[in-house]
Each structure stands twice: as structure tokens, then as C-alpha cells.
Picture 1: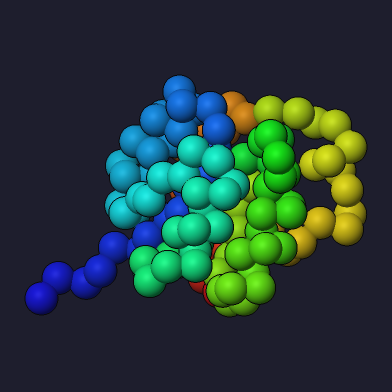
Picture 2 (picture 1 turned 45 degrees about the vertical axis):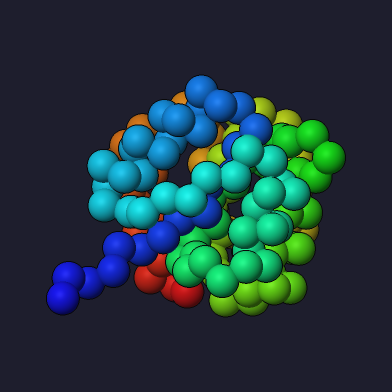
Length: 123
């Protein structure tokens, strides 16, 4: 029996970015579950799907990535989070954010690989 691939819950409201990130994560050897918005991500997290890591955009309508991570952590406290942002503004610089790495968009494959590996190693 082959070992199970680590499963990433990918949350981004931008379809193009979600498609590219999905392809990058799969090329790195991860299984990917997509959520087009925070409410969908919460539904997935509340279900029975295996989730090894959450990869979420920070700037989304209705709920930012930090708020989403806080909500998911109430359901799955041990799941690590990696955040992505195209904005170097106050949200990403907030020292009071939940634990997790923040990647600046556009990120390179090597940066993504390292962030995912480090985050999964610390779960």
C-alpha cells in the first residue's frame, strides 16, 4: 500500500491564483482540496476530510486568512497554516496573527516547497 500524500486545504478567492497554486502544490507531491472562499473552507474543515495543512490567502472578502485560521483551529487545533499575500501592508505585518508562515506573492517554487515542508514538520 502506498503512503498517503499530505493533503493541503487551499483557500483563495482568486480562481487563477488558486489554479496555479493547486498545480504547484500537486507538483510538489501534495493532494489538494480547494475552497474558493472562507465559508467553503470552514465547511470542509468541519467535515471528515483529512487536512494536513491549510494554505490560505490573507485578503479575502468576508473573512481574512487570519480569521479563517482562528476559526479552523477551533475545529482542528493541530493543523498548521501557511498564509499567502500579495500585499505587504499592515495585515501581513501584524505581530498578533495566529502561528504560521507568511509568503509574499508571487512566491517561487523553492520558497513554497520550504514553507510547506517546514510547516508540516512542526505540526
